[in-house]
Amino acid sequence: MRLDGDTGTLYAGLAGSDLHAAIAYQDRALAQARVRSADGAAAGTTPVTLTGTIMRASQAAELHAAGAHGIGLLATELLFLDQEQHLTDEERHYQAYHEITRAVGDAPVTLRTLDIGGDKDMPGLQLPREDNPFLGVRGIRLSLRRPDLFLPQLRAAYRVARDDGALLRLMFPMVTTIEEFIQAAQMAREVQAELAAPDLPLGVMVEVPACAVAVDRFVEHVDFLSLGMNDLTQYLTATSRTNPALARDIDPLHVSVTRTVHSVATAGAANGVAVSACGGPAGDPVSAVVLASLGVTALTVAVPHLPDVRDALCRADEASLSTIRDHALETAAAGTCGPRHHAARPLSRLQPRSPTSLLTHVRRHPLQRVAANCFEGTTSCLHAHCDRSASC
Image (tube, rainbow, N blue to C red; front, side, top):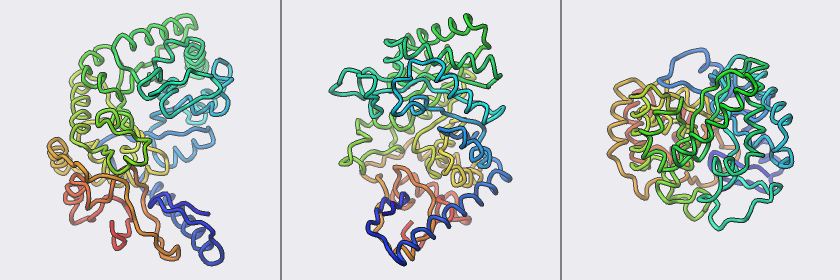
């Protein structure tokens, strides 16, 4: 059985020549990704800083090879999957952070405190069941209610910064009010003082609309902001990102989303606060260019997607970014965006394609068509190495 993650096609019962073709396809895709990663890391500059995300210290070599400038998001809760009983163990947190920061050397690491709840359930914690967990006690709300979960990871992070000189930043998820940030920051600074640890930049994920609308209050207190595009999109458009029936409706380039991104980025720039973006759209070549045009200063991208995102950004000049930004702030795309659906093709004819996110192919979403037109003469598609004869 093989899953083509680019097209969403599952091939079952493979045998003989089809199985060999599937394996060859995977090998070709990996080989091309390595070449693009090496080429991209060695040449060309991008309008934004590219950071990566890893979950194991052993992935640090891939991060370096892809040319990522450190880790833009270390999702700490994912380090404890199926090990929830250790979430209150400071030493477990310390060891996990120590191994990853040591592996990346002097590269910066943004450590997101526990984002439990919503689609990230931790049965071992035996948290009360909620009718709507995406609007419940999740992220920073849980951390502030459960210092037995929050303080161990704060202490571990400051100890790693003190003992190893690690370039850590702390980021709080699902922040709604400035009071939540102030309370979390106060707890962090008390731990810092107790441990005689260095000062760490403190920031928030902008994924709750209330935070985005009141960003003018946040920029007076935070050191940085990170747009969590997945949750921000679903909350702004009231479209669940976990409901298969709505897969074709959720649109990370909806004008409400692009205007919000631009508003947050503008407020950050006016106050000297860096604004990055993470999530599925940051890992899609087209939407990465759109995000760059809207003013974000950095993108956090999964390592396998970095070569294609870098390739697209390297070809984005000021004129094209300006054109894309103008369209992004005025283009509504109701009913046009959804995952790409390709008819299943014989495995022997499959060619490696670049990773995709929630976005449809270039000819379906208005912003993607605009982006493609801006690059006319180089390629008609921002998905690098795309087999355009196969409908993209």
